[in-house]
Image 1 (cartoon, rainbow, N blue to C red):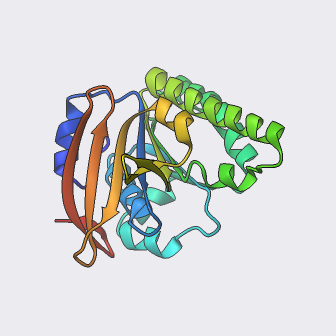
Image 2: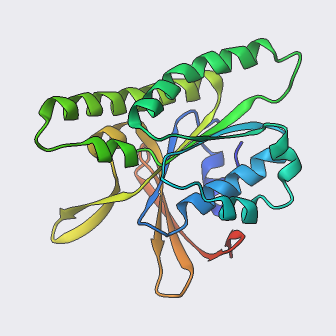
Length: 236
């Protein structure tokens, strides 16, 4: 099971193990979403398990990766961390649909190697999708929504069949509900339909403090935790 740097979240998720579903990490720009993902990667690499980390933003955060994975470089050098830069939404769509072939090859080689993929992170899911949306091109938007739905459906299938944890990172959108603006993951109803577990990260009035909201859709539960964001990640 993957480990978050927040023991309260680990304890809550243990009740749903195996997860076999999508976990959404979302929040506004700069709250620490990528940092949280790198801490999760750090924990899993040390257990000799492979990770696919798909990064869709313009510039890979090399300095942050070095800060958090410092001391783990030997593990990364033996290909347990597969860091892949994705530049187009179509490329993300194609990769997700080819991923099962890679997982099948791993299944066949279990007797040869024990390094099996246990985590896929997409950071971020909808950035490239939103770049291609165009209010004047309805057919393109319909196609993009279809592809986003297919990506999430395929990821859910892979999580259940191959026992992989899937994490999708997202920016936020706002909805006004009863005179109050509520933060939701970008991607609208498509993302909401497929995501069972969501973690919202918000800024706090204290410098570098962050509030985490863990929501479990099926049980209509929400749990709240506070951590400090440092150069090496989140800590109490």
